[in-house]
Length: 183
Image (cartoon, rainbow, N blue to C red; front, top):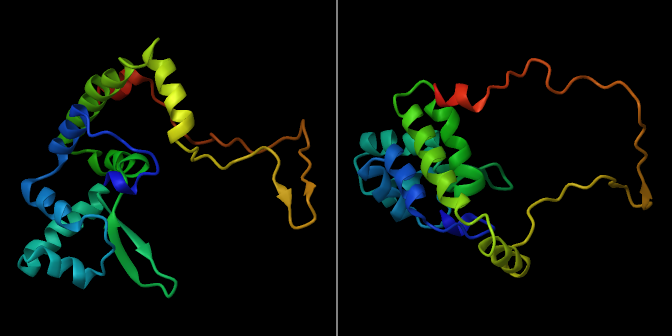
């Protein structure tokens, strides 16, 4: 899963704990078989060497959990590949876990272990070192700019200020961290 990331994501203990909360042994064995290749459904089933009914259950669970993503070829055929860790698997876990008994355990593990683990490195001299290394090794995955060029003319688009726009957060419910933690 790490090879699908544009940035290397180290397999730290909190990440492994998070995996252990949501993966069964059979699911993990199958993920290891997939490696980084793209498969049709038939190829994925043949790779597992499991009875079809057992494979269907495991494969659909892995898709629902966000470990396997679906890509489409130019002619619309489905191909299956391991999802990246970030952005990918972690973001897919949240909707899959809603209402399940593992939801609270995953949230606690993610916050208490994962966030705490990385916060240890967010101070001098570690932060300075990471910043200097990331300039050389990481590439930005942000491609959004303030002024996009319009067509082939090279003219900048105009942004008109003081215009009323629809509220982008209308109907969105935001929760405080304490409320999320108490779920």
